[in-house]
Image 1: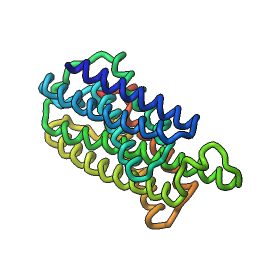
Image 2 (image 1 turned 135 degrees about the vertical axis):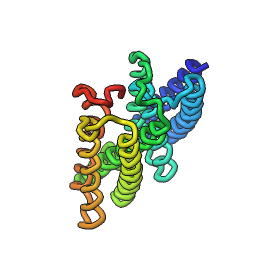
Image 3 (image 1 turned 90 degrees about the vertical axis):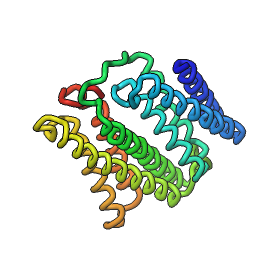
Length: 268
């Protein structure tokens, strides 16, 4: 049953990606509508898959890299649906859906690992889901920042090029960027707080020296600085977009890169 739900989700994501590319090439709105409907169906199957896995394994499906990638794909698709429902950005699919498809496909090649004893705790449910929600929202800031740079270039060229008619105004993109930024920072802040409480109660001494903890705090600091310059100093435009993209590079390192350095987060 789990395999059937997973395959259905992946299949509809693939259909959504195909029609997103078709919409970009042909400039026909019908392909955009088919893509969004396909992603909505895929998201429903994906949600059912995660719920089924949770009941099947009797634990929250976020305790290993394989489950984490599947959940991250779910969060990214959720961000896609949220962003499209509000801003109707026609090219959204060709930027969001390749990552969703890649994350889903990568789970096929990763072996499931046994659950470490440290993860047999109710704290992991809240901590990990909050962190993944933050990562997904920060991917949204990355895409919004990229869109801002693309649209700014189009406007400065004074010619209608590839993205001119398919992206909203710079003001709307700045608003999208800020909303994803605030949501991501809020989720990450609460996720880190829950993680600290959990570590103080159940983890060994010196948890704060764990490479993933240090990387997560660095990432949190980057987004704190980004919020400060955006809301307090009034920074907008290119500088904020580039800083947001830098922040997501730190997210990727926190999520995947620090696994090579060992520590207590080697499970994913």
